[in-house]
Length: 281
Image (cartoon, rainbow, N blue to C red; front, top):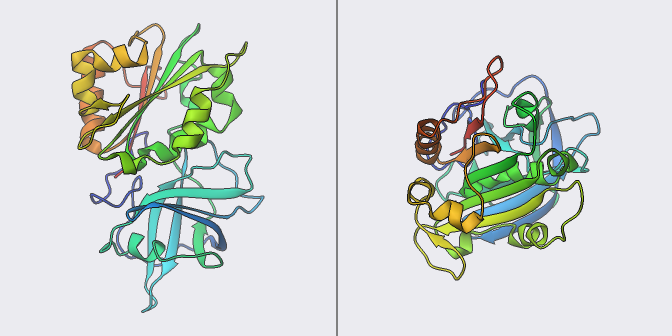
């Protein structure tokens, strides 16, 4: 796979979701659910035990599977929320009442089990920027909805705080009750400045609701108007800025076009640039 995952069916809530049903892959393990949190009726997070042999990079995703009541194996891909050093694998997903996979996961409780493929996948990782230029840089983490998931993994890992001087998380959701992990995000935003550690700020935008301190509208429109940079207190600068885009494919494509029009380049294996993407829907 490249930095852009294949599109999943709308609403599945994961990058590069697999086909609706298929035979179980030959290499997977059963893992017990050890923690469940329901943010609202349509959003949940859960954790499973992580086998010590399971290694991944912050920003990657895992394929997880279950067996239906009729014995059919279903598999989907979800970004890992946990940092690589944590003992559990955490996932964050949309629960759709009619979703073949997510509706079943939405009924899970402690002690239930789920399958996990042994090998993680994905390229929304910091090492992609290792050769994209020197000097102080700003990292813009731009997400819609559950596209926040891989950024949580990246932010829970110490490397990003050493590699950049400033980190700006831009998160777009529909309503205020769709904001997950806010306490953790606010803790990073409120952390005191320290030498050798990036400063963190968050720009929240709502598309169907209002909240004090949050912008209204879709991310591309806020970039075009200048409202996003004003709210962040930072400029989009080719010498400093690097971008990760994850979420609704429409947002990803619109932002990619906007940034390219401003002179930013896609980051490729043999051609270092400014932008890496993951479609997550």
